Image (cartoon, rainbow, N blue to C red; front, side, top):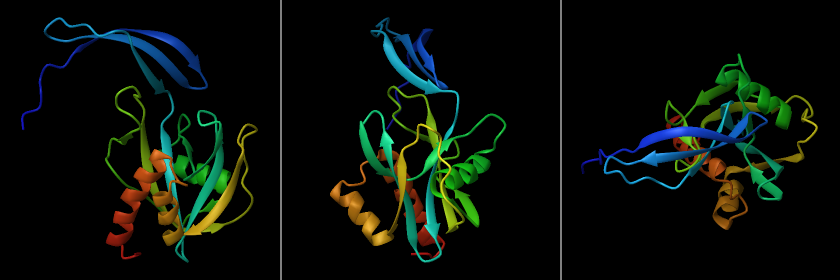
Length: 191
């Protein structure tokens, strides 16, 4: 199947909101045949997010039940956070895992596409980078930011899969990361 080549030309960006390293911009697009879109709202960020699948030596998964503002509720998800300036993605994984869960990993493995995975490619310009953290062990209490509200939960792979199937885990980045991780764990003979 041929991929269409009539890609629209992006017009000037108008920044509507810029706060906490994130932006909402408005932008017009013009197709080669002259059709112009209504102003398109796009979301992007200055920091790169990492999503971490913490896996312990006894086969458990470390999750967080965190308050998420858009959901206005606590959501069960994998830990994660954003890469700070000057940090490698791997450093961000280590720091976020320790801060959010109190766990450290013996090994971290990047999974998925080299350029990251789109959150939602229609209106989010941000991609996230999934990681598998192997040999996770608890070394202390989480050290949360003042606005973070979460609790750490430990579960088995089987129970985690049931939580996804039942809808208790409904965070798309957690489900996507887990799908990639299960394939990697099978390749490494962990499952």
